Image: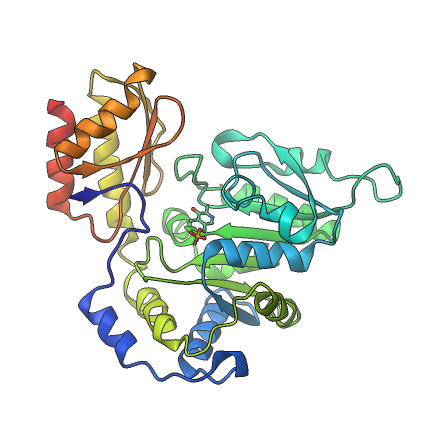
Length: 338
Ligand SMILES: *Cc1c(COP(=O)(O)O)cnc(C)c1O
């Protein structure tokens, strides 16, 4: 089976497994796991920040960040289709008792102008206190859309001016960095906290990093423990993350090229109405006959290709480390003859 449902389906390579099996470990709740400490130090330094915290998932890093930044009753500004709101089980309300201001925006992205309009006046007791702005880059529901760095600079300047924390759900931030050809440090300067997934395009089996100031990460470490996320000999999985950062970042452009080839093929298919312009490794297509979506997914499966339903009449395909040039050629050929 060729699995394009998500970039989370990758298998750790033999080399990665070797690194994991041989990792030096200790009790990380006592801060004694050398491999976790190495990964955290490396992640922090990469983004030009003071500290980082290794967590079990991207949902956990996002939810911890929200919990540290926001008080109960405070408000988070985010896109209406953002992962933190739509796909984290209501965690903003459940874990942090916070309110949300959901904004529309082109392909999952917000603008500084839109954000500025929804920052509540702190002196008026009617309004919840705006306490966090959270961006998603690349934007999953936006079909892997990438923020323009000029807009990021504007949003960051606005938040700094108002002393408002800015968080990045950077589950796929390395895909965005690859497109903008930016060093992670440039993004580190825009944000107060950054969540990075090691188990998406980077191919590690488990784990995410939360990155920020030393003071922020100290608070985050306490929240991680409260959320049940303190892990013991976690170096075994952190080693997969270190391996992923060392070996699987430079190659992301290959996934982007494969996604462009799928986009091109889909554009030539009579049964496809439109495809969101591909920017990274996510391809979102709209079928002409929306009612045919599930039947189409089943038919594709019979041909050995898995993709995901992504809304009414919509499908999503995500390219990744375990999707080869040969797999891509086979998919193009199959899509064209269906
Ligand atoms: C996958 C993803 C996450 C985190 O998901 P986990 O499965 O909890 O690791 C967060 N944000 C976005 C945009 C994602 O795609």
